[in-house]
Length: 387
Image (tube, rainbow, N blue to C red; front, top):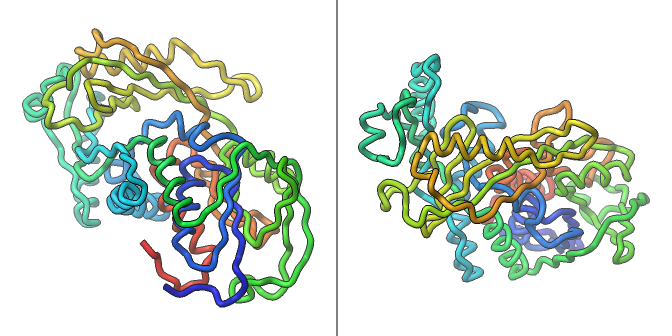
């Protein structure tokens, strides 16, 4: 694999949710990089720890441009990434390969739009199926078809455990030589101009940044801000604030005690933005709410909204009514204000501060594609992916 002939370049990644961890692992496969990851908390604590890990690629309505390209890249990469991480770390990462089944219950919804998407996906090399209620009832007897008009089955979409994935990425990156420092907070930022050690990429002179942290001063050639909601105060210290606002999501884990429907076919079932996610042993995750701040940035979890998610899940699969609630949890998703999610690219005014943040509800889905994008910005063009 080609590598830098110049002095080793130091990349500092701030934030160790799924996005920061994916970037660290991706860059760890490049020779000639020294990589350090900082986070105030242990890995996968913020929005990653609250995510359901439903990877809606082919079944999404995004069909062109960057939005589709990133989804496609990520879904394809997960097929190789999960076994790769499991082999490296000897750690099991739950990965549901049974696809996603979307229930349609709006009688006004035109099936023709879905037929068009099926054709588009076929031309792109992806498979989608439209099921009538008879087929749905036959394959998924746990679904109450009374108010369902049809279903869309996406066999190539996936679901995974975001926390297990993030811990696997961290362990694999450590194995490849990445340094992780948890419990470290960034206090301030300073800038000076130095001769670049990476002239091939960014020209002879470049502004070099120092971060003041609770562990002392950190200098690096590249800084990658992957701190979710923490990206706003971080970029403010560089006088280029990226405005990212919190959106709360709540979910619950319930125990039925046995698989719903056919034990051999346990896809994610979704409809009306509610997911029923099988996680093994007759347990299911149900979620998630979407709760915006009403006053400032404070969002107290709304119990009624969580109950309405549970009720919608029961309407789809009535057997869930008797399930025991094992736990509920919530997390804040980072949503960019006044611009589309995610925010990936250079921080305005800086050649070597990169943003990989504001993924809103798609951090897990887009983590591999984000890691590729950051790698392309750091590595000279023409250096291929090592994966």
